Length: 231
Image (cartoon, rainbow, N blue to C red):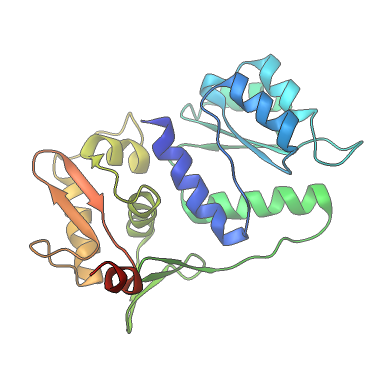
């Protein structure tokens, strides 16, 4: 799947932990960012990073004398790949696709272990007129409180993280089920319908999720304040 689609999903999820995030599209940009910005944590794509890069990143840190905690992501879930990642110096590894809740939990655990203090957590974030509670898998749309399944929450995060960007069915499939998953042809449409039903979002006059004929789906939610200001 598109690396930026995944990066935006990570950025939105980490907003719950009140992190400042920056992204890089290749190893050279990543190393420059690590050297200049001195982050407290690195989340890297194991599938495009070599061992030298991994070792170089893990020896950098925001605090002198410390090492930078590294969470690796991979689409290859075999034991050999995971062992190679740990050998290269990563502290934890997750297989793509992943749930937003698990990503947040692992990041919080890594930073707590590295720096000794729990980071501030904001379970509820606001995306347009939606309030998303990651811990309880609950979404508020206006006065309505909605309980989402794991797949529905991951789908909502993926769409909201890439707001106003067209996501094709293949991109959604790869992000939520993985590139090797074989499913019935309408699995994405079916989950979109379920999510829309819970959001009370009419596809003919969408407030949150717009269907692009022959293309895919686009998250269009904006706050009511912004909508009033532009009218």
